[in-house]
Length: 104
Image 1 (spheres, rainbow, N blue to C red):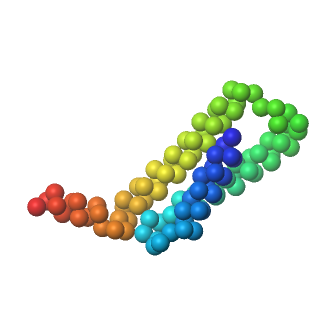
Image 2 (spheres, rainbow, N blue to C red):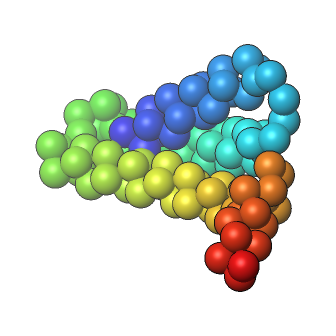
Image 3 (cartoon, one colour):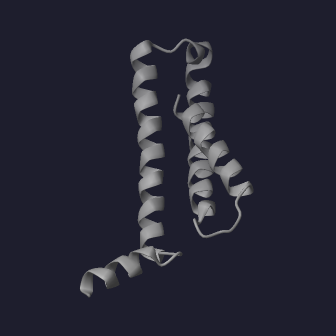
């Protein structure tokens, strides 16, 4: 489940990055985080399969739910890191403008 969730997030980020009008939103960072997580989960799946063999394809429901929550947590953490980086770099100047407005 973790692999599927992160691959879906990576594909969505890639499509959004490919169809971008400009690079203000820094979608490349999000894209690389999700593809990196997908590669990590793929390697984990390969090693888990080498240990469990056929049992790998018969997961317990509880394990699937735990993996789904972990996958969603990874996607959420990636989004948080991306948003924080976006707020720090402030490519459109929105945060600076809001801070100047508050000072006046």
